[in-house]
Length: 91
Image (cartoon, rainbow, N blue to C red; front, side, top):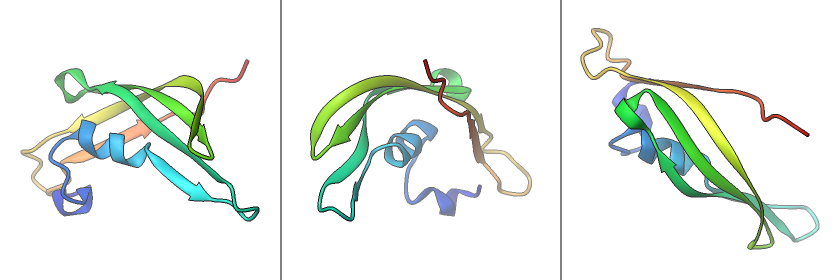
């Protein structure tokens, strides 16, 4: 994606933290969401995060998020950022 699509975020870490932190209202009046607790993206190559499930603002299960990151400020077409996540593993 081009920098203009990153909603003002200056780095892959900031963008992905924002993408994975959210709250959604449910039809029954409750809320569900996620909160990134800690994250890192060493060398802007792989994003690692600990995220907590939220139900009505109360924290629950904590799990890991790992994304492959492409960060190239010199891309000739201006597509400086991309990421690939994978489906969560279930026990």
